Image (cartoon, rainbow, N blue to C red; front, side):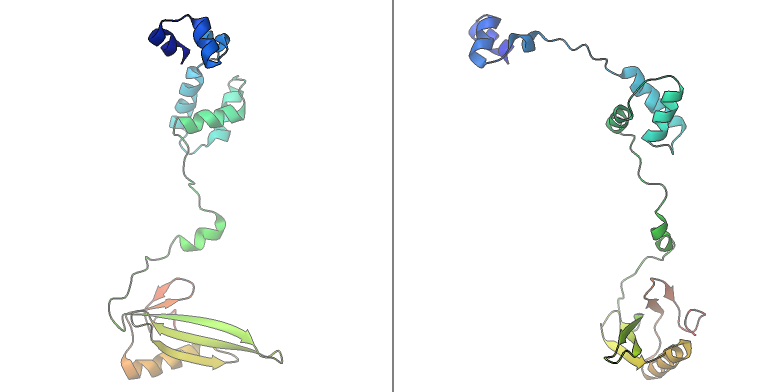
Length: 188
């Protein structure tokens, strides 16, 4: 900034710094810090060979090679070089969702139904279950079956009853995200 002022007004460096309120030392400062070019290239080289390694494993390898470098610096250079990788392994809690089929939207009635169980408790502590069945396209509630115990036979009885009345869908979406075809092993 002082250099532009100097050139524009033809004044000395001392006068330009005094007018701008800058210390003259900041104008003459030459950085003595290493540009980290060698470290950057070594980090890129290690990341190229070991593509699954993150910055911590690269830092350990650098330390073993004799580089005395802080892991925060390795992280900063790793990020600046664009080497930050996305998570390769899904957390264990998401493994069940890895093999799900893509959810398709229904385009007509009776193409896809959603089925779910709910549970609640009466005032005296007795529990009951509720089977809900909804057409995904029309959002029509096809069945609400209530009972203390609802099992596979109850589900097949409800599906048979509704199937006689309006036909069975191509797929049934169950609350765990899987799609099944009526009459197969998932719905018995």
